[in-house]
Image (tube, rainbow, N blue to C red; front, top):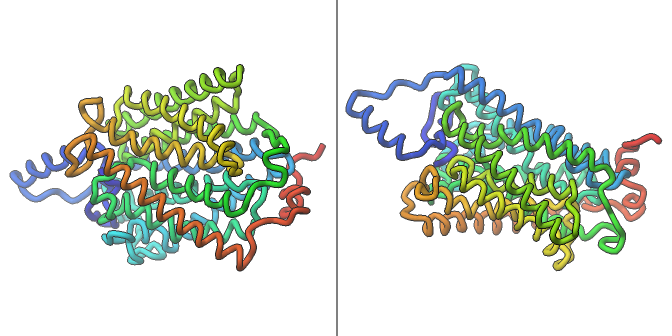
Length: 444
């Protein structure tokens, strides 16, 4: 059930999420019939993974950029889009230099080493399973791009741009790449424990959500929060962005099968079902609580469902996906409204409320709905039952939360001393578009 296992001609050979048990049965048959044939390029798998990679990149630019940009005030619309765009560029370069190697370059328990630094050995002929390793590397790059971009939502409208760039580089290097190796890399210690994370519930969403919460606490609330109303300035942008996220997420989840096969097909189906269920659940909860359903609510609910089904997309069945979606819609609604108000932290665009809480719900429920008795594809290697799988999932979540929280705090505190994290009060009041970029989003 791991993202990669074994070694192909070009490096890590992906293990499709169709199930370890089927692979073991196939291996037994091959032993009886002779040596296994060398891996060969599958054009169908390659074509699908090229498409999936483009879809995941679409999730960040323009999807996430538009989703976040519409939720800030008009004077900060460009700053959020600039942050997403710059993170896309910076994370891509760092991934090529060493991030890919740390995540997928070796067999260590905690990191992959630097054997593939500077993409050493990446040639047109190198394979990762049935696809070119260049495609696998780029697909994983898009995950490394969107994860730090998600964190932007927690500290929107108040972080210096230079601090953002430093934080992205350090966090990608010290947090994202190692955690990706723990769960998906060959020899990763959480993978060895049987943690199921098909497409990034812990690696992407819990990781980003907790880092976002830490960042929001370290920077402090926006000027005037919560007394001053700060409504979204353009929900048309936000709904457009959410729609692009929904479409792009099929690449995120179905692409994580790393093949055009039945697992990818089921991942696509359960992604649609969980997202729809979560959108309706959030909308209904808001309708009951506030008397009217909002377009921001249904869009946020959809994103919560996308987040929660991500770790379970390769193992949950259709009815499990509906249950996960409902749980995510209700849980994230509570976290993004009542919990945030009760605790008083300014998670500006609900990075923690949607991604942190949604990732947590999805990761734990993956342990339930992976069970074949509940329509799932099977539990992790060496895991005896649902209770044990949920405990293993909780271990993965707890380890990610602890490491991310501490590492993110150290990075942020260090940067605050060296370059300063927060813009001045005058710049914040003026708006980051003018203060940091000398531009306006709207000329009216």
